Image (cartoon, rainbow, N blue to C red; front, side, top):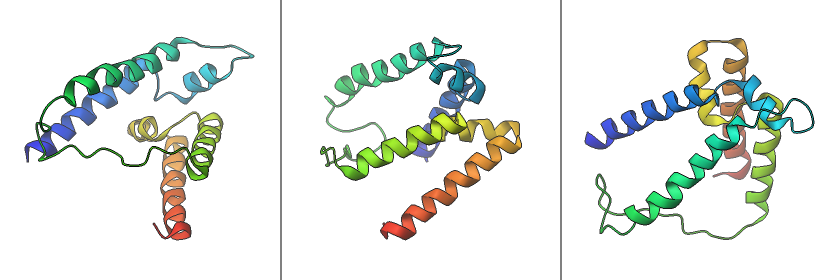
Length: 137
């Protein structure tokens, strides 16, 4: 139960952070991606913080014997850069550039109930199921 409460609290804080930073606003994200036009560089600070925090804190947390709310650490075993990773990153980037959303901010933007956010999330879910069907994952 405490893991569920912790996950809910972390999600709440993450969602608020996405709104405050502007990451849930596709117009702001697209302005950040438009480096040849009106470039809004403010999201670079958000991304830098998003990379810096885990870079520092993972080193501290992983020194513990076990996580606070689990029996053991579950870290990814694969470290290779392969075609599925590169292709997935490219497709993600294209979708982000077209829609101005990535999965976390898209779910946060659902709170606005705009047709745009709803359609993006529906397409994201359909794409996930299509991948599962195609790859039999």
